[in-house]
Length: 39
Image 1: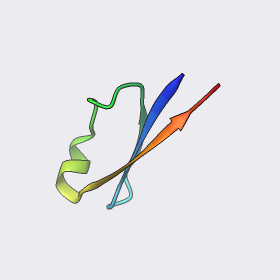
Image 2: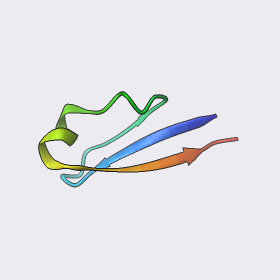
Image 3: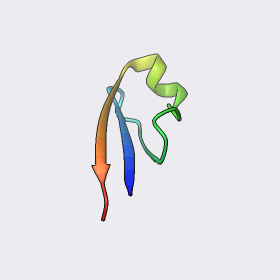
Image 4: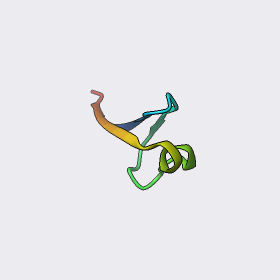
């Protein structure tokens, strides 16, 4: 399973199963995307 972790420059973090799900907070302060491969 592949999960995506969004780590925003403002410190907000969220794990999601789809890259299309981007937290609104990320749009406000920028974002970094790390791909987590589990299993």
